[in-house]
Length: 358
Image 1 (cartoon, rainbow, N blue to C red):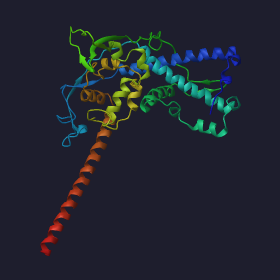
Image 2: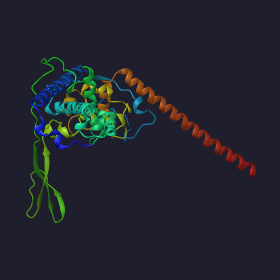
Image 3: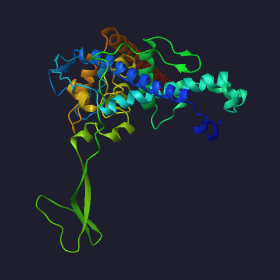
C-alpha cells in the first residue's frame, strides 16, 4: 500500500487546494485550543485531596505487598490540596493536541480519497477495505501503546462533543466553538532545550574518579563532562518533551498496573477514561504539580500521589473498582483455604492408612 511521490507533486496542487490546506491548519489550531480550554476548565475545577500524613504507604515497610490489609482496602484521611493555575498551555502541551488532530484529519482525508478517488492512490480493493476497517489508533504506531492511544483518544472524544465530521470535496472536522478570550490565544513559543556540560569526573589509568566541590582534574587525567539540564527540561516544558509521553500518561501506568511502578496502587485496573477530559494526556509535569497531582522534581512519592489521583475520580468509579478487587481477593482466599483443606485431608488420610498398615 503506497502513495507515490507523483501523487503529491507540486504541479498538481491548485490554488484552491492550497487555500484549503491553510484553512484546515487554521481550523486545527482553533480546535486544539478549544480542546485545551475545555480540559483546563475541568482541571481548574478539580478538588484534589492530599493525605494528611505525607508518609502514607500502600505497602509494608520493605515496599512489599501487604496481604493482611491490601492497598485497595487502606483508608487515610485527606485534606484539600493547594492548587495554583499554571496559565496558558505551553507550546509542548498545545502541540500534543495539534498533532493528534492532524492525525485524525489525515486519516479522514485518505479514507475519503480511497472511497471516492481510489484510482489516484493505486491501492487494491482489499487494501482499501482493510484500511477503512482499521481503527485510527492502529494507523499511528509509536514507541509506547499508551502514548499513542491517550493523546488521540482524548482529542477524538472531545471532537465528538462538537458534532460529526463531514465529507464533500474535502474531509471536514467539526467546527470549533466561537472564539473567545478563554478559547483562543497566541500559541506560546517553544522553549529550547538548555544543556550545560559540567566536568564531574575524570578518567586516568583506566579508572574513573569522581570530582568533589572545588576539585580539579589532575595532570594526565581526561575530563568526563556530564549534561546538566534546566528546570524547564525537568518539568517537561522544552521542545524534546514532545517526543515523549506526558507525565500523566507515564504516571497512570503505575496507577493502573502494579507491575509498572515501584509501589502498590490502591486502584489497579483503573481506566484512563475519567482522566481524558481533564487533559492528563497533554499536561506537562509542571502543570500537574501545580494541580497537586505530580511530585516535585527528583522526588518519588507514588503512594502520596496515588491518593491524590484517586481523589479526583468519581466516587462510584472508585467504589466499583474496590468492590471488584475485594470480591476477587475473597475468591482467591476461598480457593487458597480450600486447597489447604484438601492438602490437610490428604495428609490425614495418609496417616490413617499408615496407622492401619502398621
